[in-house]
Length: 164
Image (cartoon, one colour):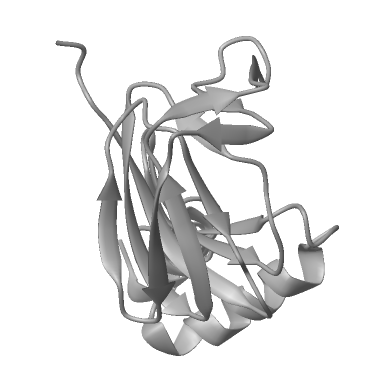
């Protein structure tokens, strides 16, 4: 085959293959650069519908595992994640973290959901949180971020835990 016959095929192959890595990254990121986090925060802030609802943005996902940036500016309902532990890293702000005890006023969010939300927690233990703190929430543990003043931004990782 002559060179002039190969060039059109090579060009077509380059056009077809070039968008694939960008498309894969846009729909399911495995990596978000630190330099991109301010833009992720800005998007979460813009999409927050109410101070009583946290806004989340994915920063890395793979299969059922997700790393989320969570943006809060007020009190959100307490939750329990059934069969999932949660790793939390506080990026910005201060809050009180209440955990343990019993979720009250709870009802499943929707069929198949692993998270229940409630109206309060009875018998919780509280701890003050600040930027830089890292902690784990065991599976099936009621928890809530309270006393949020201003922006409170975390990275959370939900990890499935096998039933014992």
